[in-house]
Length: 431
Image (cartoon, one colour):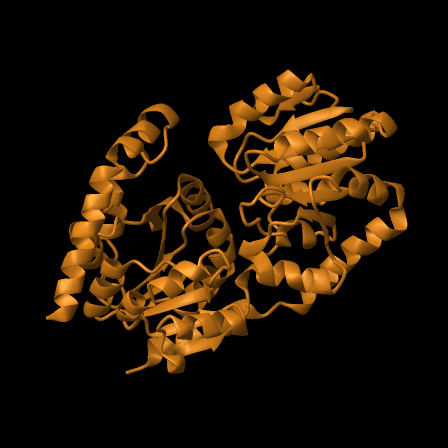
């Protein structure tokens, strides 16, 4: 009775919140083009390709919110496909960018938008898919979704689970409610012992919590798009360099990075910055900023092989950044010069590139802390950024050694995908 009341109150509150915030969603759809894609799927319309999923118990549903989670579970999806050839593995995402990458990686017929957390949107998917197992990347604790999936007889696993420093206070505040939600989960595979402890503290059954490591350390280097070879050729022919790749930047960071570039150009007039804003809707705003600052730049979407020496290539495309890091003399990973929690430094590290981040890396505290403990990353404040970049470019020995230590750190942490696949196989085999 109490549980039913809780579910009712939650659903009413969620509906009320959606109704109150409706003007925001409509504005985002109308003027920024966000959330329009996949709207019918989010509301419960199951794509025709998914309706042909076959016999009950022959589907494994993997949910990955956005690009980072899609990349993290890519190796796991392949292992699940090999270990369970009689099952169909389908993948849902929440964001448009995650959807685009997932469709490219896993096939369009196997990918769809995650339904909103209302019973009317969730039940059509459970009826069509009848999954034997649901695998959720990181920490997506949707109460109705977890309850209905569990009640339908599916095994549920949270993989690559982490509780960030930013999220931790809120989770603690609602631990009483979370305990009712987490009881539906059969297995938690945490990234670290600290994450495992936090999961137990907010209500996860200790017997269901294990440490499996971070799947992102196993992400293979992507197949390089044609852009990488084209840029490499251009740099050689024009003598351009050094090359700075600044990825996943957010509002407030580009002015700091471009000021640093202006300083570098005094000493290195052929320097090139490849600048990749985190969110596609900001591409035009960053282009305007470059114009206002009088910095020579090219948009990737319109680049036809022109010499890039002494300017900025604005990477206004999706899915190319990870491979482009391989071209960098120095990589900067954004979301960290301003208080946004940072983004993942693994992509440049796997290429052995000297990597710099700001001092706001709370979302990746364990990864950054590990690299910092091995002198495999440089952490700077906004005022220090230009000086640190200049010092690294002036000292080839230290810069190359920094990148080498990053690659060695990556190799030392591999194996999480195999451990996760083993645990999921064990879960699925339980009577």
